[in-house]
Length: 146
Image 1 (cartoon, one colour):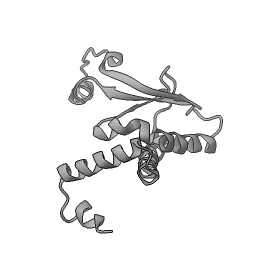
Image 2 (spheres, one colour):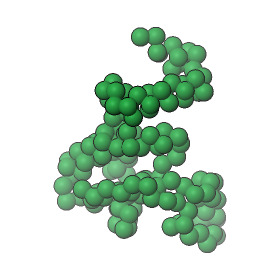
Image 3 (cartoon, one colour):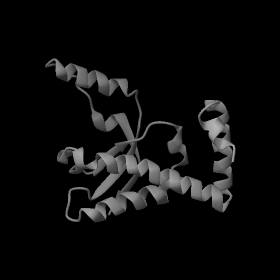
Image 4 (cartoon, helix red, strand yellow):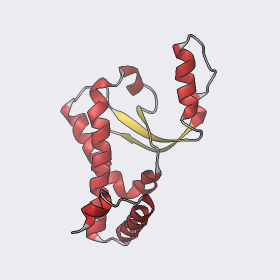
């Protein structure tokens, strides 16, 4: 195929981003291969969430948002094309633990730099508190209940 060289040896982010834009245009036009690629991308992203599910503190599942998942990066601009694969993998993980705490999730985009959260954690580690309104630091762009 010749793609691996461009993914590893001669990787240039700008060129790859341009390639992804062409794939996105194809997916929006309904091209089956492009749609399949984005579906698979959604599955891969969801598997990252599934990998950490057993280690997530149970309190994070209990808010009105369900499990809040912070989404960073331009890959999330293609959410609609990745949604089906992403939700399918998380639904499968939910099905493997019926009755568990993972009943719903929300995807969030930060309004402010993630450095704000890092500063809050740093302050907490030295016994100080930064008064932050976490609800106003992110926007929910998708929610799903199983």
